[in-house]
Image 1 (spheres, rainbow, N blue to C red):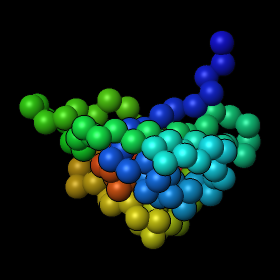
Image 2 (spheres, rainbow, N blue to C red):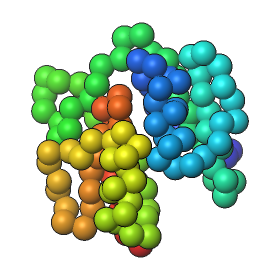
Image 3 (cartoon, helix red, strand yellow):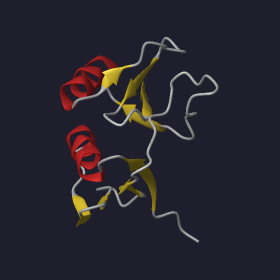
Image 4 (cartoon, one colour):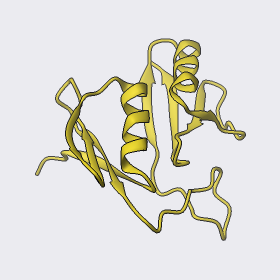
Length: 119
């Protein structure tokens, strides 16, 4: 078995895919109205986006009874400050709660949290 990718649900798969294209610089491998797959240039698992009409934004940090975060992306960067600037320019929002001093948690346009950290 080989893990080929991770899928994030979204109210608009095209919009969320466009955000991650800007953030990661990955090209589209598949592009359909309710489904987009980005290809990792290093050959690793890709990242896909699926339209989910009943999508509910996760809450970060998690607090019942709101929709709980089920997964998040960890993104290693060379320069945390520059990566944070890039993420914000791509459309990410810095999360209010930051659990670690050397990691920055951002929210993508659909509310999925992702972490930026240095090597």
